[in-house]
Image 1: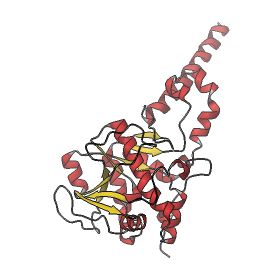
Image 2: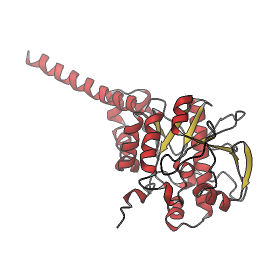
Image 3: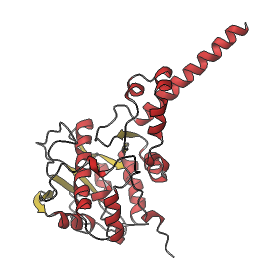
Image 4: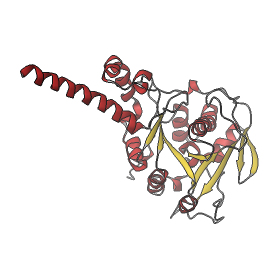
Length: 289
């Protein structure tokens, strides 16, 4: 039997990010997409079908050559219009979504900046994927979650950063985009990005982020333990993706991105603990003497 372990999505835990953080967008509205510069308005059902089949397939936007899916699937990136100003990634109205397809080599040659996101799936997305059937919540989430993530990335890193998000960047209902064909490509996408975003359900305690001392770590240890107990950290995929990217930033369910890099945040905690341990050892030596 064919191994389909790659084909089992991991879903947000009950106490972590859920879809009630979304829903500001009117689900009955048309979803607006710019594809190769052409404006397209989709009904929710048509949008989900297009995103998860071949509806967003175009030649590479740089070299204008087609893709050989058996050799190199497209790197499908998301961006916003130049006139879009991001103030609140979670609450402000959604701007139109721009979708562009690239060869990975073309991205590298042009030094185009993009950020891939590693995240558990929302329940409605997992259901629509498994059953290969439309549901309204999946369509809304498929459109809204990547857009709000893109808005958060634009606010944090600037307008020249694009987004790779598997809700749209991978046609989930197309078998020839799945399994052994797409997995090596995903690894290459994360590796070429230099950093990724880990979409978690919450942030670590602000006190530890702002003042990473042993005292604050001790006082807020419960919050720190809860943060590292996040569902995402229990899965292999985010670890592999983070390892390939080499760096990561943390994003909460409110689409806010933690200021320090993830490795810096962890290092600050370890340094605070080591400093306290060294101080304790030093005092012990003084008492003996």
